[in-house]
Amino acid sequence: MQIKNYLQILLTSSLWGSSFLMMKYALEELNAYNISFYRILIGMLFINLLNFKKSNFPIHKHFQLALVGLLWMSFPFYLFAKAEETITSSLAGLINGSTPIFISLIAVLVFKDKILKKQIIYLITGFIGIYFVSFGFSNAFEDLNLGALLALLASISYGFAANIVQSLIKEYGSLQTLKIALRYATVISFILLILNSSFTLPTYEISLFPMLLLGIGSSGIAFLSFYNLIDDVGAIAGSITVYIIPIFSMIFGYIFLNETTQIIQLIGIVTVIMSAFQFSKTKT
Image (tube, rainbow, N blue to C red):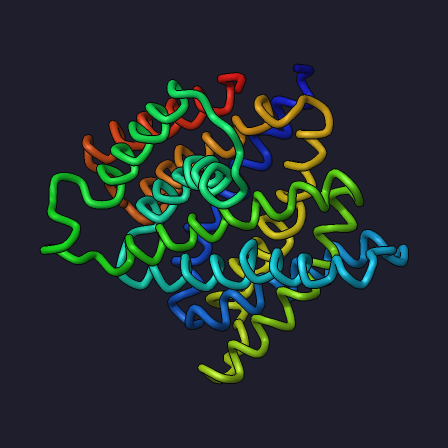
């Protein structure tokens, strides 16, 4: 990889890693429905301003694009914001690190990808790591942690979306796919907002900057940087970005919110990352 690729990795992972801190700040003024809607709306406007070209998606592809908008953006963005009402931004970022394992599992169970016995072992160790990240040594059923469960559900949603979006990106390109998916996500999040909550405008003093960073940075620049990176160096090398996100979320949470992370959770996320990396590297 070239130096520019390493810079892309740092930029993308730091933007996505900071999103958990920004959601925590935004929650001081906005609820999860507002955060999800504004984040997607700002990202959609930013991406569409970058690309005015008419998109040539066939009609039958639009259901797929709408599904990507729902599962890749509207649903998980809301769930992570809702989760952070009861868990730290660091923990939300750590649980987000489980996404590659869910991508792999869903590819096998739902999309019928063939895997080796060795890869089954990596999936099992990955889920052991996910448990330790989310619940530590506690019993997940006795000490119900709703925030952790919501964050896990968001990661599962990413797992479905990543498998659905691959064919679209391969055929139509990342920018075109992201542009239309964001449009659908904006509509879906708007409907969810008006049905479940009321509009609260971000103020300059509290939530405007976090929402701009979430929208332009996390939902705009980071997505583009990530898929350009994959185009340059391939999916396995590009996936390093996803593995670094939890590290940034922990760093930002500790520096700005004085959040701490348990040793067992650190062991868990290392297990998840190594399992996911080895799974993706192993050839079927």
